[in-house]
Length: 481
Image 1: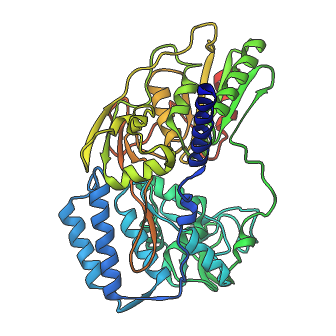
Image 2 (image 1 turned 180 degrees about the vertical axis):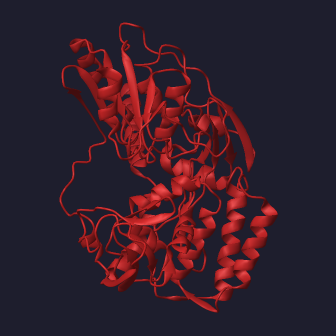
């Protein structure tokens, strides 16, 4: 009888645990706000929202005035508030907030644009119909097979709707989140029309003044109609797998990794399978392609480094974590099941939560990262490794590139990465402004690279290859053959 009671209690406990484990917070997507972009805000409401934004930044961010003196920032913001119109539409105010957040020069802090874009498209508004790149201070029409090419490739745009190219570049750059001006220009060139939408209320026609074929003697003009969102991008399904491996030519290993998201066990299985194939093939070369790497969990990069590093390594030198109540709540929502948060020792299991367990509210905690050992020689790749990066190699992708270079795991080829060596990140918390209902995120961590470079410099390639040449071809032709 006693055994039956014990088993009954165990079953009840298991059922209870199973039920409570099924309880979870609503996903972050469910919290995203939907707004009417044509609704109006008063000057008083906008000032209150701006003040809320700044107060929140100063509370959450570990070093909000890293790149600009606080007094200068405050003076510029006071001027913005003073010169506000009596009313603005929500989308106009969103553009203003986007500029304010961009001025913090933090690529991980941003105002959400998805719901703004959704309402804009739903209302049938249009977009600039041409692709263009910024080169040497000029706006040059570029080839884009996904839109109608109204102007020839290479035409130089002088004005759009009577705004000069110089002013256009300056305003568009003020909406880019990148940490250097050069990265801003590359980001804008990736989708010129999208940045034009972020900056201006132009939604039907565009009057373009331009020079054709480098002929600066004749300034032509044309008025073009805007393009629907669905038509400016290809609707064809594109293969967008997070990672894959194959052999190039004879036995050159090629590993493409687009992000460090998804299940860690899945990507670790991928690593193990890929390096098993390399060992079977007895390959002497491995190319890691991190172009367009969107970031994710930096620990996934450490798992990859175990296969290629010849010495102990670490992803970063150290980091400063600002442990606010808002950050803790966001961390719990993302990483700690709701049903077991009452059991505080659980925070000692997660490698990140252990960092701030017991920290005082709003305390900045210094985290020093330990060196990790690579695999034993029989499991490790012994050949030459090349890492391809570009200006879209971001966040955890950039962290991997710095670690790869600092610990001499191989050679970096291509463009500088899309993040500084040391940068702010881990923007987990969503916030909403009280009047406009605009959503935004703020970084909570400042990462210090292994080389402790803290200036305005991203990870530099050992072999620079510009956008006119494929770095993969460069490696095959110049570094392997």
